[in-house]
Image 1 (cartoon, helix red, strand yellow):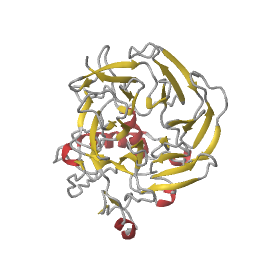
Image 2 (cartoon, helix red, strand yellow; image 1 turned 135 degrees about the vertical axis):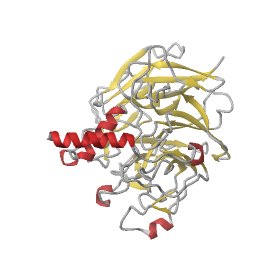
Image 3 (cartoon, helix red, strand yellow; image 1 turned 90 degrees about the vertical axis):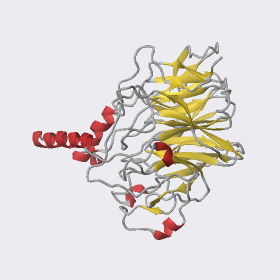
Image 4 (tube, helix red, strand yellow; image 1 turned 180 degrees about the horizontal axis):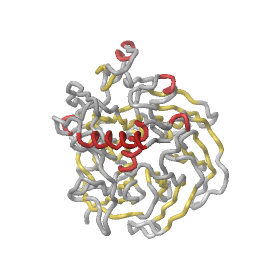
Length: 438
């Protein structure tokens, strides 16, 4: 139990964290694109903490859509909606979820306590609802008039994927499958475990899922258990990686590694190239390290924790691994430092007009380790011939108010059955719908 002396020291520490720290010398845009600027690391005794306080949306308030677009609330009053999945019949599944409790041996200490305060301020320390809710817009007016709890009693669920008549759900510790029939609004059958997933401390707890186009494989993203392996590599076994699962047998293998916290995944138009959005490391300064999205090579290694954006060595990590650094793959496209780019969705079947056609939508949850703040918006990265082509464009902004408080924070993004863009907002507890302005 924390003593008054420890609490007083912690309060002073938090005050120092808020008042101290370095400031970015480059605009966020300098850390975006295929060749971002990567200045010399700027490590400080006290890391920059610049969290936006979560306040939610005032009545009738909403984000700001880009020119040619409009936004409305598809569903409100949800409980920390994080991830979205659109079923073939147009029903929308939303994971109402948050981090699982940490094991007792992983809790405690001043740093964890201070981190908890920061997370609570950002709206990220609510108890997990542990359910998947189904939303249906049967009359196609852009508002879900049907809401039903499809699954409940889960363990911090996140990713979802439908293959045939089986719905796969990634909990924080395992992949489960459930029988599903088109139009079903509630599943009462118990889930069958397909495979266990790395769990325990769960520094990064979200486990996303995507099925291969032929339905034979599942890909599961698993984030690291630390910032840069500061607690040793033994607790990182099987983490900072994307796993491939054989649907028929449940057997799994590591598909790609060295990805600090891969979350969103999407298939390129060729149906063969997997893309992911990755949150990179913290505490190297406001200008480092850019989050990124990249195509994922089978057997590829992407640097974490030993290097970033290719062969840029992180000297904080010991022992060094020059052999791994030498083969670290340079990501395809940087998404800006500390933007917390989580959501990723290809624009296929979207009816949003140019310039929002033929590319990736990215949900940027927003920074805590940058001054000034970055992210807190949804962007679009245009593609040509299967690769990013040009500067990112804002799709949805205004999640921060004029006081720098978070009215909302975008997470998952998905194109719905009508071709509109859905955005899960886990602070506003809203699913936003972005459509063409008529």
